[in-house]
Length: 391
Image 1: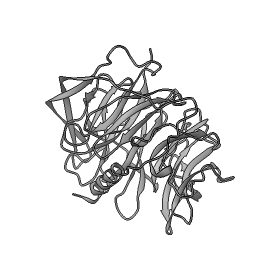
Image 2: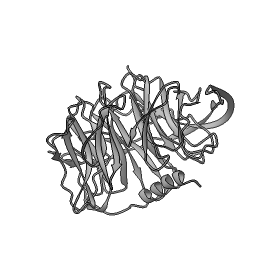
Image 3: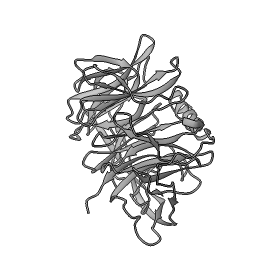
């Protein structure tokens, strides 16, 4: 097992084993009541594609067709009330290794998109919802690379060829470029490539790129002189500037601020901070001096922030205003919860539960008034991404 895969496996096992007890912290006037669905199975055929690159740099695509079993989850009566129409793409190990699946936002019509003994991770919709990019260690390479495919799983095409892609790929707002980071060599690096896989360009030493909504700036984390720092640069890699000590940076909706995680409590615990994109006026939003607040996400309009935290010795999903006020917990004390992201309407959150034996995907209203469980079984389902579908 190579070092890159071992790192992912150890992280997955560690998260799955974090089980504790907390007191209930749901918002006032709401209860964490989960509504489940029944499932049935159907058979379908999916075209799987692998790609190779010749010495001259051209890409060759080979197609094979295999029979798989796609679990189709059907609502007992009707769609969950108040859930926005959309598609959710996610990772599951229900068929052996980690493969990529897609389903409706109410948990119905679960369809397997990839089918191999490799590890497929980090699926993300393109801005227009026409394709999915993900990472995989298929094709016998030593680490993960970036791949693309259609929404039905066809035309799976390898886009990168430099090894050890780490973390989910990030699209430019216009969908024409993909940014990603690698763990190859002594320092992680950030690259860009076109959506057809040509024109890979090195941009900076660092990881976790986040692109501003206008596509002109990238914020990222980089390790220099013994610590992680938050940086910003132009989208072509020029004008690199250090802003603060921290990691996991992301732009606010208008690009004027950057949110990140940094250390408090003698550099042991993690809290959430924001800073102006020019490096001025850093502010601390959370003050959990004995816990970890990490991987925060802005709502689309920038007014809310969702993040997981191990407050009270249990990983739960928390929500707060973008200035740090009105913090409340969305989840219960039955499981540990991770991977929270806002749906594009800003009124719903997708997140995942993890325990020793399984993990499932949920959708909830921001105020916690309803929570629906979208997957069930003895497999791990995680890393969900949402794309809205017009009525």
